[in-house]
Image 1 (tube, rainbow, N blue to C red):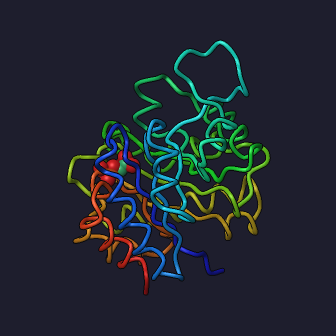
Image 2 (image 1 turned 30 degrees about the vertical axis):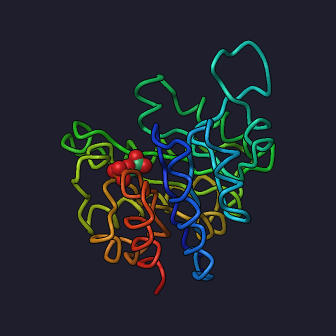
Length: 248
Ligand code: PGA
């Protein structure tokens, strides 16, 4: 099964008006790469302007509330993301799981809400250093992803990002054997939970200190279908080489 690669940037809490030019440059470069998909997930405050700065390019959010509306101060619904022009959203990033106590069931509910509004979804998973050192990374992340998948998951609209927490923003990258072992394990768990067709069609991205220098190796490992990129997605100069590396 050939899966089209997806290179998605996660701007986290970065990005104001003066950064819109980077989005334009990234979107223009992506137009020349017809074999892969590229997206940028920006702060909610920048969504509409990012869409305007990059017509036709996939702009996304970084989180969504599971409920459609209500008294949830500071939160954003899936319909609001769509209204602002978003085409996708990240759910269950480890920074939200840790800082906002988001459990698997909540992540699945958020993903369901987003899919219900027609957004594509990237569901994140990944283990802490303590879990890796205890030897239970495969089991922990496998359970995390199966429990974080919504009922209505469809490989056309839902992707998974494996991001070891100890590799995020640290400059430490998981080794090729750690990445391929985890991605193969996750595909196996998806197969058991949702069937082989689902598992074979679902994109599994790697995230954690992906840069231009290491992207070529990571993006062509077995079972790696793209990258979720934090720091190196903030400028076109750093992100475009990662996009290029995804193209064989
Ligand atoms: P990083 O972040 O590329 O800066 O390590 C990745 C992520 O958290 O999605």
